[in-house]
Image (cartoon, rainbow, N blue to C red; front, side, top):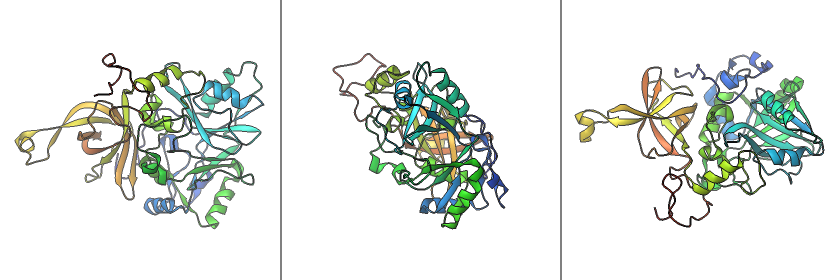
Length: 403
């Protein structure tokens, strides 16, 4: 990948966006790609756009996202019974999120959730597949599932507030604040970098997208692209299904038990894995933030291999130099961003056993890019409220409290 990040990688857990935004006709607009195809990557000045977003004076076209509407009197109890979230007491205009897990506990779908009192709205990157799966699970319940992506578009705002009765359907991102019934592997809420990221999505009729964005610009918001929104997301360690999720992902690896999993609700698909890993600790992989060496003007693509770096040559062994060779593969990059303050950064999923201070090398277009880690999920893999262990565990299944 060049320093302009032009070559996006294949999405891992998403669907190709179905619409091309009319806002791509704006002067200076550069189209996004991968899961962000159909909307603008930036509008000519990505640094200014990031600064406007950080100041809370921005509006973002997020119309590449999918929307699924679930209506019917049984909708909340039904969704509660088949997903990871506690939804039976969800009140109108209160936002949360859910995961659909496989029987083995792997993440299959992720969605933001908000109910308007008449229907439950799911914002997701897999609308067709999620709607089809939900439809198969209806049985005789009084629910109706419709993929309404063709009718509704999302607008992003740097605001942390639920929608009011006078506003359109609005989902306020709960990340990173630990929800009731959730837990965390990473830092406390007030120390988490995501605590400073205000973000919500407002649903508007797709035919009104341009008008709705223009109204927010008239109120002082700068139109920003996904370069800015993704840089803010990576800085906040916020997992995204089309980036951080692959066929092996369990929510513990991404610290997603903070906002998307209720540990004390009734049985649902994948719950056994969620409970077992929470109780025993040590999920097999962990999310990290990588600070990338940008001196070579080359950045890796999502999917690039991450290797540990081993010293080579007498100078490096003597401590007089800093020369590394590529060692074993320890993970892969999931998201890449060029942040206006942090510089080039990435999210990556690595082996849990990788030491937190290990120097790393990422492969990018045949070039070795040095990287330093910032811990998101600690290597010991123990949540803050893991049940106390009664004694030594079988090797490989957990960590004795004394160790």
